Image (cartoon, rainbow, N blue to C red; front, side):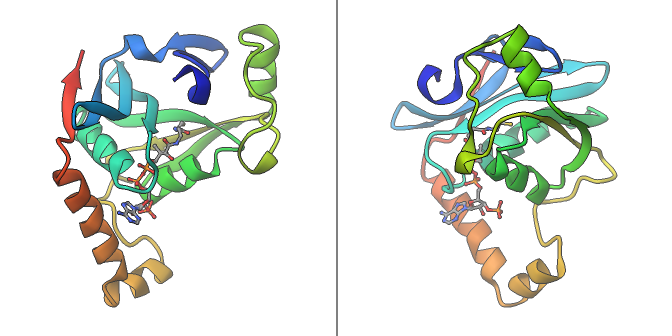
Length: 182
Ligand SMILES: CC(C)(COP(=O)(O)OP(=O)(O)OC[C@H]1O[C@@H](n2cnc3c(N)ncnc32)[C@H](O)[C@@H]1OP(=O)(O)O)[C@@H](O)C(=O)NCCC(=O)NCCS
């Protein structure tokens, strides 16, 4: 957590939060934690505070997110903050129905200056880490993860999307996926 994700105190919206102090779910395999999601509820909304999969593109993130979504199904909105360099997260969330809801140019620079000097200056693909982006998922924009574009629709017709989804579910089912924390 410290090495890869900068420790439990994550900066967003001009404040630090201890994401490991929040309720959440862990994904496990053979007793080893392979993923984690934490969240907090406020005013009938839910902030997805932290999500990470230790092995990428194996369905772990999806399983964690779907578990969270079910747990907070009564919330009017799920929202989160990510950073401009995190293209994988932006892709992941948008594929699951999230839409962009806010951009704060320079917000990460400000957090680095004021709250947490350890925040990396350079992120994925060598992109400077500068800005906060917010995404949200509301019931009206929620949908089961599935085809969301003409290309996806074409993929689903020939079964490619469907088989990718199935293999993710199968791989997670064969692991003892989710145990509750908090
Ligand atoms: C964002 C994050 C949690 C996603 O987790 P993940 O476990 O890689 O996500 P998944 O494997 O469930 O899904 C990723 C893609 O892999 C695909 N996939 C899943 N299982 C697969 C498999 N067995 N073979 C091939 N592809 C697979 C999924 O279909 C998905 O593609 P899609 O989004 O186009 O549908 C992960 O990238 C991460 O930990 N990032 C670092 C921490 C971070 O930045 N968190 C977000 C902060 S805001």
